[in-house]
Amino acid sequence: MSQAEAEIAAGRKSARVKLVVPCEIKGSTEAIKVPVSDISLDGVKLISTQSHLIGDILRLTLRLPTPVELAAEIRWIKSDDARNRSILGCRFAHEGDSRQALKATLLNMASAIDSAARRVR
Image 1 (spheres, rainbow, N blue to C red):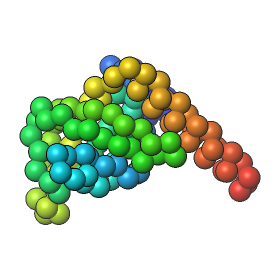
Image 2: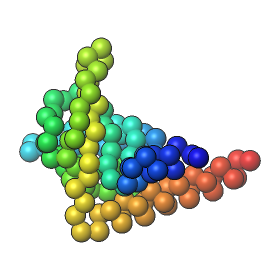
Image 3: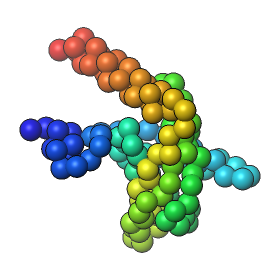
């Protein structure tokens, strides 16, 4: 059983995928750039040096080949004091067709990666 299948079997709605891409958190005055460490159709794990609280709603722009804008609620925070940063576990608050747009973008990325890998072999 793959990691993705195991996560789904364990009760997760959709599998997480390790993916490091840039992301912006839009605030009232500026956008803060943070890395994503993994993503699923339901949420994302972010690494931030800014302080946040559980329950905060973030406006995110995932810098994928087709940028995707989503609202996300911080569900948990893990402090990494040694590196002066926090790891934020966020659940997407999908609006309209944002879930489908994210799914299509991730599938297109996977297809492009698969095609490139086949050319390298």
